[in-house]
Image 1 (cartoon, helix red, strand yellow):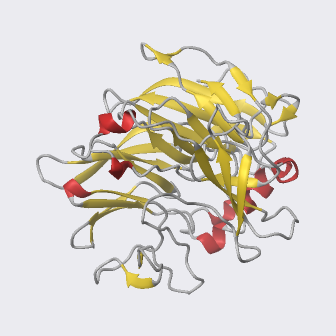
Image 2 (image 1 turned 135 degrees about the vertical axis):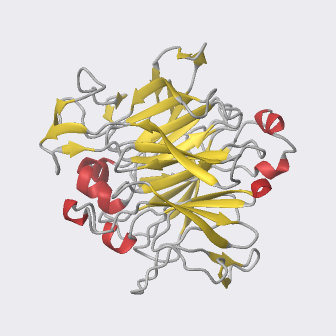
Length: 397
């Protein structure tokens, strides 16, 4: 699942965004990679109108022209993220595409040395800044996770700050060896000069912000999700593997998904420098009770969570991509990260198919109201990364 980014530039202010009409469709990227099915990937349109007789169903499939590609991310914005094209000199910069023809126009960065890798980025025009994350070397990581790749530079460690108008790299922050910074999110308030980046392997979330004194940028660790001591897994310690973040349009809440641990967390942001955990729900993961992994030591949980079963169907995989409705009342989740990693860590996901879930975040006085489950059947047997939307599944966080 990728961002379901409605074109927020249609709304003059953040309060207007909160009053936007409810979303009616979701565009979901679906892949057949690693399934043994020789068909092209497709973009699915899912009906999100609860008054529709087709609610929660795929109402259109747009097949891709080639076999064995892997659809992954999509969105409304005019930006594009790229994996390297196989050249020996890897670059983590940006390319610019023509907005009408999609022809390649060249590199965005202006005669500066590009970082070695790149993954995600976000910008804040009023502060003339773009922030990008390192991610991982895709040609190596695409083969799956190998612990021997640790300490070899495969997994990135840098957060990069760019001058937006000059298109030049101005600052780099080292977030720790093999920290693997991935998702970058600014607060939605256009005046706010701060945001967050999630590090998959270290389990840390850093806040980046503009320093008032020196007019440059700084970072601080504000969340740390500890690894779990385990047996029966590929390593003795299992990281949370934070792969996505989303911030509510009113900047009140931060949602975090941990693909390996299997939980989604809700943090309250009244003090942006000290996010407060107010909600947590497990929708899968690798530490479930009865699975091959035994948790030997856990700083947070007293027991391993139960598997998620919906109408007699077990949900496999872990939360991998998030999208929050503009009014903040519906959180959409898919559980496929990347086909080779899915096959390695969640082989049953390949057989049974991925799902798309809808969670309803209810918070009263900063505390979650309940954890009620009302989940309808999943929408298919394909591995999904999303683009926008909702699904036939509903949770209460």
